Amino acid sequence: MQGWIVSTLLAGATVGSFTGGTLADKFGRTKTFQLDAIPLIIGAFLTATAQTVQTMIIGRFLAGIGIGISSAIVPLYISEISPTEIRGALGSINQLFICIGILAALVAGLPLAGNPLWWRTMFGVAIVPAILLAVGMAFSPESPRWLFQQGKIPEAEKAIRTLYGKERVAEVMYELRTAGQGSTEQEAGWFDLFSSRYWKVVSVGAALFLFQQLAGINAVVYYSTAVFRSAGIASDVAASALVGASNVFGSAIASSLMDRQGRKSLLMTSFSGMAASMLLLSLSFTWKVLAPYSGTLAVVGTVLYVLSFSLGAGPVPALLLPEIFASRIRAKAVALSLGTHWISNFVIGLYFLSVVNKFGISSVYLGFAGVCALAVLYIAGNVVETKGRSLEEIELALNPTT
Image (cartoon, rainbow, N blue to C red; front, side, top):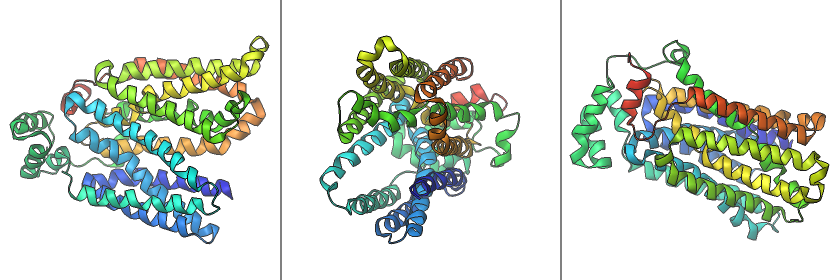
């Protein structure tokens, strides 16, 4: 039953990620955020007050829908309102604050750990940020790119003035017109994503999230407490806190490097570091020469893996996708890619332990290292660099016929 409670969140997130793209195209980015608060609030309330397992499952599913919608819309909105020169930093801050939120939730729960009803309090607290999201987006500017695509030129100019200042209105409007946004082309449907015109770039987005999940991040987090115990760190909380702190530290570094080193460079460095860390983890469990140091090496491998992940594989896909997708397909293509993320997350969670029981954790880690190596090769041949280029410049470069 615990598996059902966990998996319904992922199932809801899959539904939400696909729903988010349609809502964002139809109602706009800010309105979609406000609509997203509804399943987040109801889901948190039902989970916190649940008296039956069925109510808990419904609450988790609704919360998952809200999480899925926000996972698709947050990177989309950030990329569309951010100035080119700091778009990478602002986009990666999203991942940084996710990591900070996870760490803060862990720390906040410590005083309540002895209370058998502490989990109700933690779920109930989740209502607060959902309300703040709905209220905050009521006062936030709409994406000027979405407004222009809808033919709402005065509203787009007003949003640009609010975001960048009146001195940049003409410049941004020129970029929008040059890229052909707001043209007479009909809004893209879901099947358009699979056309020869768009499929290559859409497949890159889906592949990046697939590599992100198949690289083993959830497995490393799942086994981190056991790894730390082997090194003499008995506290599960201390182990989780160290992993969380490593994630925050790596994400902070990524934010500072995103607009200097570039997205592609960070991705390749990240997956290379993850491959090396996975190899170290695998050897620490099997190589007899390392047996006296296996616990320490496993901890080092775990921390290095999480650091490497947070440098690129964690933050870059969600940032890069809205940059490489044409405006006509952007919301739906991001939603499709995030759907790949949640589906692969669900499947891995379902079968991971069975695979470990059959092949052993060392062999599984070795397989993850191979996936990371394949990711480096794929990124080298298929991912374009987007730093320092406006969304319109990127669109013209990747879609010259649009």
